[in-house]
Length: 289
Ligand code: ADP
Ligand code: BMX
Ligand code: ZN
Image (cartoon, rainbow, N blue to C red):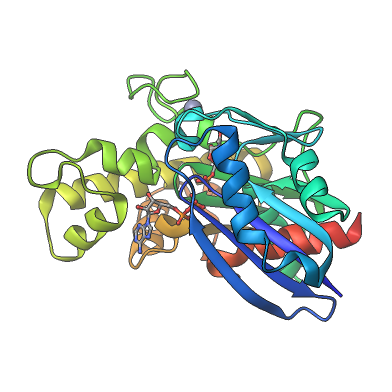
């Protein structure tokens, strides 16, 4: 039988079946409703899982937000259009009738990326630069989740005390400067109203404003990674999310990292599982529980 893996992000929801012998099939993706009421999120989940649920005997979820006691609580409600509380476990167990395992999306992706490298490393950090900036930490082969599910929320560490207000309420978070939403919110003039994907296209065409915004994001992530190296002595840092995986972004972060003191530098690589790291991580993690 299969595990039904679901990844709920601020921009998209994906789902797939992952078999016991690690075949991923029937990948589906829908947009996350823009400002969802709990009912709209429920309906989005119904629509994505309905064709898959009868082919699975367990459910594994990677979701944006703090995941604790089966409930999704947003740390930055802006990323979910204001939704800040959702009974994920109860909803999915009732919808599928199957046992259900839940992890934060970045923690799940961290587990997949660690699992792929587990023969050669023991300490790893994953960062997703996506709608927000999420993270996860593996120390000595253990995924840090935290008693309240908060461990690894690296997007809400301080980047600039004079920076913009983050949706979490703090000023100058990494997420408020480097995330896809933050990239879009900094655009003015000819780029006003464009999303991060469009701003990346402008960057590739040599647009100066786009270049400044994207480099600011990459420099902020490089500084975050330097802080992480000093805190965890990670063997490597893995970058994911649609901004983190965008053409040229990793190289900008690596160039900025090369300016840091040698002892604080760390290899930075792209996610092996690309956009599916959350799906894989949730499924692999659930099997071990
Ligand atoms: P989620 O946050 O739902 O997991 P993503 O990882 O796709 O979703 O991140 C969404 C963000 O990535 C949005 O800000 C979007 O504009 C941006 N984005 C999507 N595709 C690209 C791309 N090809 N290049 C750069 N940014 C992208
Ligand atoms: C936010 C926070 C994290 C999440 C990260 C990346 C919410 C709703 N989410 O920092 O829990 O891991 O974004 O999430 O508070 P994504 O939506 O960008 O994938
Ligand atoms: Zn914040």
